[in-house]
Image (cartoon, rainbow over all chains, first blue to last red; front, side):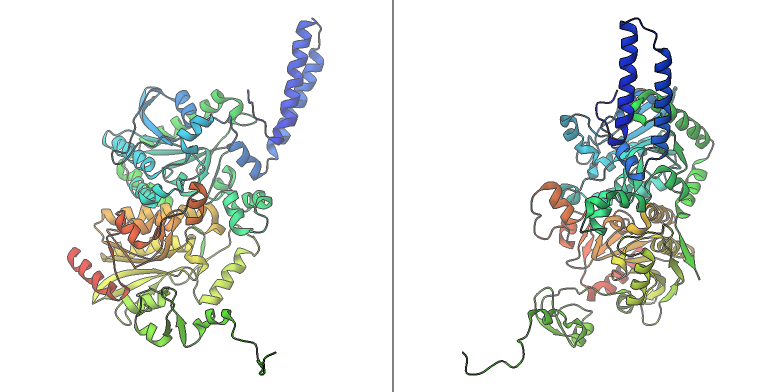
Length: 321
Length: 278
């Protein structure tokens, strides 16, 4: 179980510990404490329900960044078999922040692409904290075109604090790389399914996010800018205090985005968040991916492209006359 | 004590900067004082150092379209504060303020026009309106301009100037990147010609969508063109950025701009390009 505990998780973790201790004690002392344990378990259940039903938007952002949260490769391992990673963009380099390759979903071939963060310090540096350089987007695009050539659907797992703001990234055209992906994804002849599993920071996330269907985990966030970035721009005097307010204003959570018509479905997470049960989280994701790929499989390339362009053309709020 | 006394306070350094409203303008490039009327006659380019002053949609229409041919479309598309966004000011008030200040409804104008008698669809952004930021209205107007160009089978010319996606419309602004790019893919598949003119500044969400998806990218000299903001990059990498970082010349050298074109040459260049492709 988790080694890192968020503030609002503390009472829950403490109660869990107490129950575990009591259970150990009742075994070692051979005492019947079942009634008491059951009472505490009831209390725990209630506490969790209350806590997670009342999460603020900022608390959800914190959950999405929980150090123990499953990352793209944790899902890939659980969702697919026969995964072979395919590296490199064939132009400049390989980008370890963007992973991907061929895989099978219950025997069906799928091209999977994911944004990957690192868990240990060494891994974090290797994955550049999940921030892609242009070659990451170009690697993803190469895999998408490969999938198109062989009529395989594409599944994209999104989890990034943003595209990397670096000197080299600008020299090699970070903006162009993201723009090109959007352009090419718009008329890709095979189904694209995007799942936001953690952080969906702006263009960095959208760069592989233009799916026929966009699904989002219950505790993920997706926005034009991070709450921190927004607060730094809008509240110059006290930005750090205003971060939770920025998260509220930006409406960064999955239910918000469903309401705004930006995503198609919220994927429920195990009680307390995906980091508390990787397998259960992955199972739900897998079921939803299968469901949507089955539906998309029935469409011709022309129908897919037509519906995809229509889907994105419709998004926007304005007045006329 | 001096044997004469100053009767009024001396000239304050600040007053010099406030001159744009007057007859004379100080050039941001070389510091020369230029007669405003002369500047306007010279396409708002400094005649000493070729510094390109920032101009608005009205001036670009005059400069690039044949006189009186620009017919605005979708002029009545108005932004709405659908998120009830409020920071130090309400988004609604911010919009009203910008509308009053600029006389514009949002950060882009689109229409049909002629360039040396060639019919085109012409779009031009206004940086003066909330930093040329792209929200629903900008995205929708770009999308409709593309549809218009597709329907009329004419080239699309887009003059870009933007700080990026509009924060006050949050995720919906981000989706305008997807929307405009999707429409451009459709336009490109239909054989349409799309020419982008990058002006100072064109950054972030607009660079990561329709500003970098042209068949040809022209840039005005010295324009700032890039994805991430210089301040953020500096913080991230912890070192100073090279001289001319993210300027037109930098983008030309790195292969993202086809040509840097002087403002006074822009119309001729457009004509040469369009007549080649059509």
